[in-house]
Image 1 (cartoon, rainbow, N blue to C red):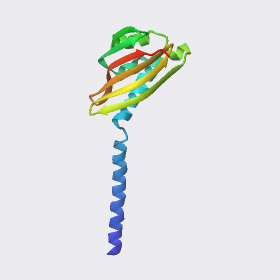
Image 2: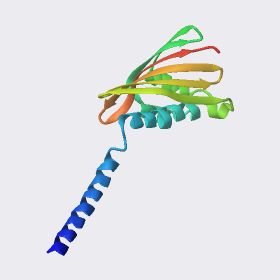
Image 3: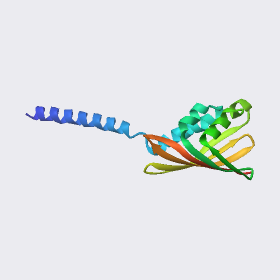
Image 4: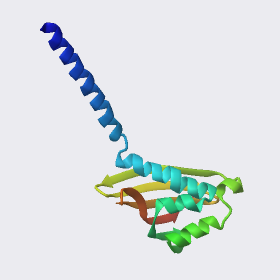
Length: 150
């Protein structure tokens, strides 16, 4: 009888361990991790290589961009911005330095903001990006930017 109880206990322990590992796999992707993935693999990479398809995966189709560049007001739709990136020489092809970093990501429910610093060409951009989780995907719905001179 003791042997049967020990076997039953060991069997239930094995099943519980497996269930814990499976459920742990599902929670590996936190909202912050998902947003970081969008920023690094679609936004930063799209800007660096000039890949408009990557940028289209990052932006909500009706997103708006506001800010100033060298003191001049800046306004574009996502489509205008992405088209501009596609029609310029990419930082990768220009051979100039490109440095992009995530400063912070804050998430509350289905909204998030990210503060970024992107240095490329002769610019030192600070971006405040607003995300919204739409149909299960984190998308950029708004971008504000400013160019800070050193």
